[in-house]
Image (tube, rainbow, N blue to C red; front, side):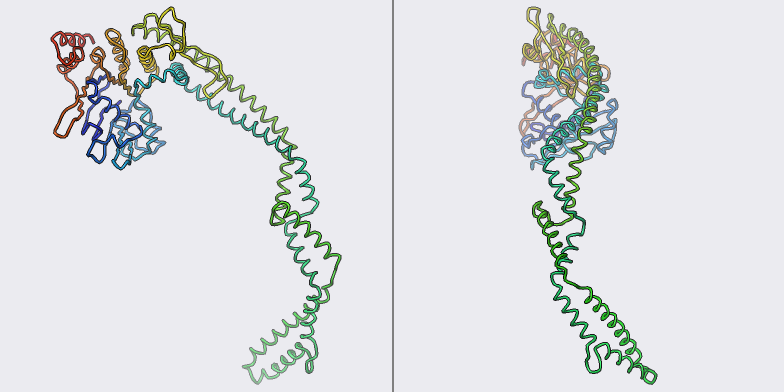
Amino acid sequence: MLRQLYISNFTLIDTLNIRFNPGFSVITGETGAGKSIILGAINLLLGQRADIKSIKSGCSKCVIEAHFDIDKYKIQDFFLSNDIDYDESDCILRRELSVSGKSRAFINDTPVALSTIRSLGQLLVDIHSQHQNLALNDDDFQLKTVDIIAKDKKLLEKYKDCFNSYKKIKNDVAKLHHEIEESRKNEDYWRFQLKELTDANLTEGMQGELEREGEKLSHVEEIKTALYSVDDIFNSKVSDGGVLSELKESVKLLDSIKNIYEDINPISERLESCFIELKDISNDISSETDNIEFDPTRLDQINRQLDKIYTLEKKYHLSTIEELIDLRKNIEIQLDNIENSDEKLAELEKSEKEQLNKCEKLAKELSTVRKVAANTIEEEMLNKLVPLGIPNIRFCVKMEDKELSINGRDHITFLFSANNSSPLQPISQVASGGEIARVMLSIKAMISGAVKLPTIIFDEIDTGASGKIAEKMGDLMQEMASFERQVISITHLPQIAARGTTHYKVFKEETENGTKSRMQVLNKDERILEIAQMLSGSEITEAAINNAKELLKSI
């Protein structure tokens, strides 16, 4: 329930701080007094796109703030999921707009995205303007109305979950069909590729090993010459022997003096280590020299294998043998999928059929409860619209089968006729503006009896009505406001204004700083004068005053 509204520097309003009461409240005022400004401020607060032109001239920013009592709304989960403090007795929404174009939104002093305050606003306030009457032409609105009266929320959610699962499986089946079709187009080519890659007998590291072995066999003479030369240096005759012989003799000489010259011991040990190491190296070189042999057959084999690898890498635009091996594995997987695809497709199609059957069963349950609700709506609309000045009203909720969709298989159309001689037709095609307004009011009243609606604001829903019809519309709104509901009506009709528990007046005031819009709560005497003025115009007559008193007594 809206408890308090604060507006600062919004168009013609410098400061407005007004409290709202539960029950049925009315807002009146001359055309252009500022009623639409107040409604515009509420719309801005609830997440409507901001326009810096809304800021009062000469001011740097405007602020709109509202306090709500949400004790009965059961929306704690919204605050929990958005990490916002929850206070059931005082929920504060605030919107700030600066001349720089920057807009900020707050819920309980927590900065939030505009989409967040818009989502919460939809749970707190339902603003019904003349523009919203166009919703009556919308199939989705008509279906939602039936669902609300049917109270099928849990069943509908269950169906939607089932339908979404069905759509996913159906998409998977279509995707697999496409993949199988495309795969079979490529099957022969993939088998050719696989044979080509398999015949190459590729193994990881193979390319590097072949390249190293081929490099060695291509330079056998250079390698043998180098090894022979080194071996000769180690073992050829230089003076009395080769390098090793001379080194061995040097070790003996140092060993002979180490007892008398102890300082030479470290050097002697190092020289002996060098001799041992060089002797091992000499032996290894001799072995390598014996092992290295030119093998033209093996070299030709290596070159042919490498040529095949290089050709495959170039053909498939790859750089390494490992990538060729990965390609071979991927082709094997693709061919394996083709072989198993029929079985997999059969399983998916079976799941699709089973899920479709579940959807159709739930859709049938939905249709059943909707038909009951449709009958209820037809009866309720007759009960409400006859007193509203359409005595020969015929109203029908037409239900037709359609292809399964996210909302089931029911296509809902509201059919309407205002007299006995005219056939039932879609309401948007035959109802006048005044009739549509009364139909929408009746629908809102009916919905409010089925669910806990938020604060409802009617913006001149009484257009085209007068006299007894206006009284009945007022009675209907007054009835909606019972049972802890809050209904606010912006009206030009005295018959509706007289039905309000609380009466607010919006008016313009000329000041030194220009024209300003004001809003105030009227006491009993002020209400009489306001309603009298609505009855007689600018010149209030005694008859109008008496008439106003009678209207107020009648509630």
